[in-house]
Image 1 (spheres, one colour):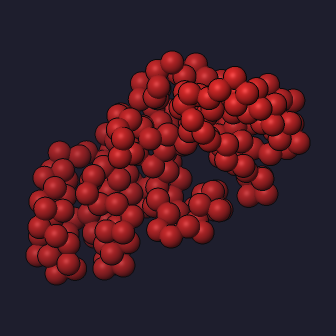
Image 2 (tube, helix red, strand yellow):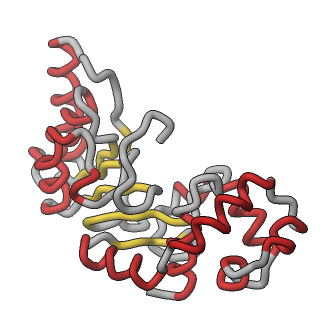
Amino acid sequence: MSTLHKYLIGFSQIYLIGPTRFSKIKKSFANLEEAWQAPQSALEKIGLEPKVIAEFLEKRKIIDLDKELERLKREKVKVVALEDEDYPKLLKEIYLPPPLLYYRGELPGPNDFLLAVVGTRKPSLYGRQITSQLTTELAGSGLTIVSGLALGVDALAHEAALKAEGGTTIAVLGSGADRNSVYPRANGQLAEKIISQGGAIISEHPLFTPALKQH
């Protein structure tokens, strides 16, 4: 894992530093190591708000980056940075994409076709039937199905993709990508099946992040 990844992992754990503030930080320092070690005065100079600086300085004291790398290895969670060639190509095109993604499994290839299938957590009988039917056909045609692992339509879409011959699917989480953080718990086995069949579970959140509404 590169030095870039190491410091990205650190910044990803500062809750108040999202893509917008991180972009400002990245442009203001020669490299991320310098940014990580920056004194308060330098952070104030680039225009970060006092509450953001306070959180950063406090969290930086207790985050051991080498131990974070060890935890990732232990949890079998990998990372991919925006600068990496295997970062999902379409995600790179959005405004302020996540600087770092955590994942287990295999990322889609650059020439893979992806389709998002999402919906209500309480689908009707017809909704359940049509979701399974359409998704199985789409996955069987070579599309990689992307959803959110939630109850209802999301889970149905993942399951239908896995039933298709050669079907693969990706779950994008609002929690950490480690096994214990997968939410809802009822879909934990589904998450492992997604990984075992060549897909992935992906998150922009660090290890052990709970599934909160704002995620």
